[in-house]
Amino acid sequence: MKLRIALALVAAGSCFGQVAFEVASIKPAEAMTPQKMMAGKMNIGMKVDGARVDIGYLGLTELITMAYRLKRHQLQGPDWMSAQRFDIQAKLPAGATKDQVPEMLQALLAERFGLKFHRDTKEQAMYALVVGKGGSKLKEADPDPDPATAVAEGAPVKGTQTFTMGAAGGQTTVRMAQGGGGAVVTTGGSGGMGGARMEMGSDGMMHMELKKITMTAFSEMITRFVDKPVMDQTELKGNYKVTLDLAMSDMMGAARA
Image (cartoon, rainbow, N blue to C red; front, top):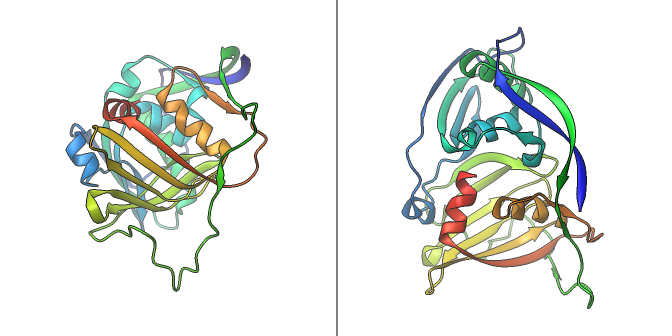
């Protein structure tokens, strides 16, 4: 199938006046390992705490899509844009809000990385996520529990990290921690995605249970594991439970993509 999309094309450029971080530091991120991933010690994505912004293990690809509110397949550039990862710590200026962070990232990218872009339209091959001939066999997600009384199965038992990452329709805030039995548990989420549980199986495969996800969010998620964008054409409008078994090499590749 073919899809006509708008692409942001990246080249060297100069900064222009706009809202900006009061101060920001950028340094190369430490390499990710399977051990860090399974220990829930990853600092990936963006966390905003008051005036402090902490961005971990993101490449230029993720920074640009976050700054300009793009989906991954709407951005085209050289492979090195994803190869080098950065940790960024920044401070919001007085009176600024979290909603202005993308615009501040635009200014940071222009000033520190010499970024400018233009928009273009082209045809791109894609995969279509569709319902099989026998109809959908997906199980609908459980209703959201009462936050005042609910205790989630496999609830986190150690220190919890909170970060923001790209998701369908914008960004989603996720809380990640080490759960019982060595599993990594995530809770929260928005943009069509809820909590998940990940653990290593005896066969070396990563077992992932998505407790609540829309098909639009699922298609965007699995795009990271294949070579073309995946578009949701199921016409399923609900929230569903999905279970995946993935090789650790695929998980690491998706984290670096």
